Length: 310
Length: 187
Image 1 (cartoon, rainbow over the protein chains, first blue to last red):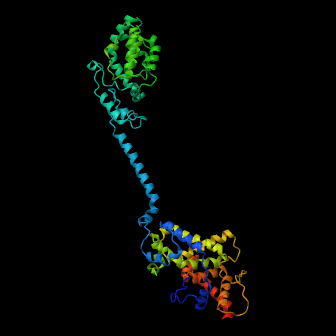
Image 2 (spheres, chains in turn brown, orange; image 1 turned 90 degrees about the vertical axis):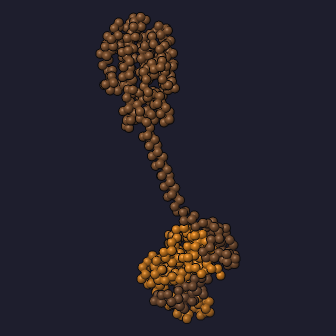
Image 3 (spheres, each protein chain N blue to C red; image 1 turned 30 degrees about the horizontal axis):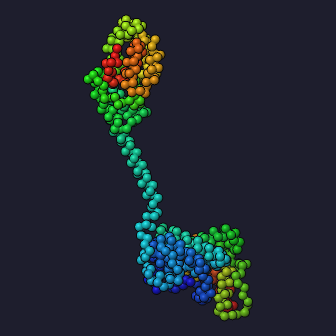
């Protein structure tokens, strides 16, 4: 039992020594032993120590547990850090998340922004607001490789062979040539059109005779007739503005050529070439020319082999 | 005796906070009886008192890592006990004189012991005293028991029960006055 009020501590406080003495003699109730055992066992569990018998507390137990000693381990750092576990964990997660996001953002910003083609897709490549960045769709290393391959921009008949774009498949280039880039292909196509028209028109005239005799006239007609056809000066070409859909001197074969173009949409350039050659062999020069034109539109950087030509 | 028995209650509790189980053993040994009797006097139910005792110490054990020696340990302990008693009263719909109105000095209707009017030995006087203590109003009885079981000063009693010093002092005075009056014929 407690000693009662401390003697001499606060003499002015109401206290009756006789009553206090009498009370101390009378009040002797103690808690049940099983309650003592449960409490002491819980204290040990909490501190990470083994439970001990109550009888040992007054004997060896007390002697071995001098005040200030820590016989049963639990390092002081553990209880000290215990309340900090959750805040530290949350802080670590936040720091990691921010770091990862920052790294990813920097990686995207650091990717080279060199143009994909001569048409100058610089604007598109660097456009931060343009929804889907063409270079994001593929792994950075691969994009860089593609960029290096595309960058030299040789003439279409460079070295009589193909640019090392052979590995660049149609779907990949297609993924990187979204609607805004189609006008660049238009510009490239137009740039070579003059040189090509004269040659193809001559051969087509021999094959089907449906072509206008004057390639220049046909070209002029095409340019006049297609008011919806923008050039590189006018701006981006709508996605649906395929040359195959425009009225021109080859309207008779537009339908089948566009179908072919749709079939070969996801085929590599070699497949396109095979089909073009096959069409020429079959005498379907108009379709071959349409398909070639479509191919050039989609693969402007691809050096067209001579055998594809009429 | 073990050296940790020399430490004061706050040092023992801090020792237990740092992992010294022996310090807790000593601390428990010092206060288990007084706390139990305090609870017993207030609720008058041994089983309930034992249960509350366990709850209180479990609370201390669980929150040991956050213990700060800002006040005496006994004040902290009996503050917990007082709150636990309040919870017990609410749950059990305790109808005994719950008023802590210090102006009410009326006799409680509950009598713990009923003693004969014959003068006996000190043992009977002690029993009589216990009966008188149990007959005190709740607030006064609590103040008296805290003083004698917890060894607390008036200020500490005020802190533990959540009242002002003057209120605690007043309760204690009333309690002593009643006990002296009740024991007057036994002296």
